Image 1 (cartoon, rainbow, N blue to C red):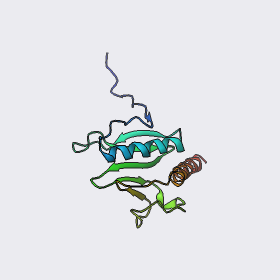
Image 2 (tube, rainbow, N blue to C red):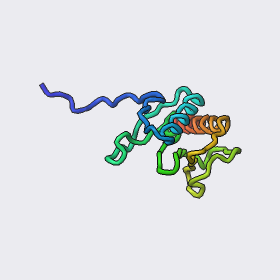
Image 3 (tube, rainbow, N blue to C red):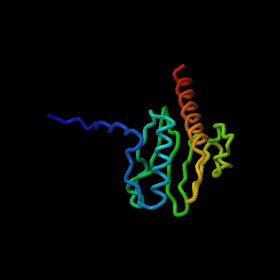
Image 4 (cartoon, rainbow, N blue to C red):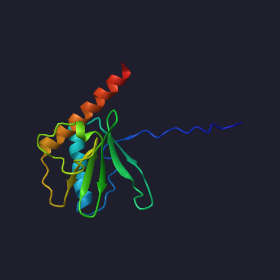
Length: 140
């Protein structure tokens, strides 16, 4: 009897699945941002993507009806890149990186970053709303 070659894709994990962060300030900051993302949208899904030898855990990617943002740790910062950041309202001016990019925008958080939690959660919700509206428009 021949076995099917098709493999079931693992179900995405809820936010918080990638808790194995480094013990330094970047891991702590990413964990704090992860908690804020979950507070802003409890339906958010987090998955590791783009694994490679230099980053075996991969990059955390948060999605709700499409990718909302990715999180990356660098030597001097934690960077959250919003897939459609250029289309999002940012009255608090959280975006401070990739400002010339056509579609994406990013927030670089240095070690001593003070996070405007209210504005950050509003940005997450706006990104989810944009993704949801794009998905609904495709169905029509």
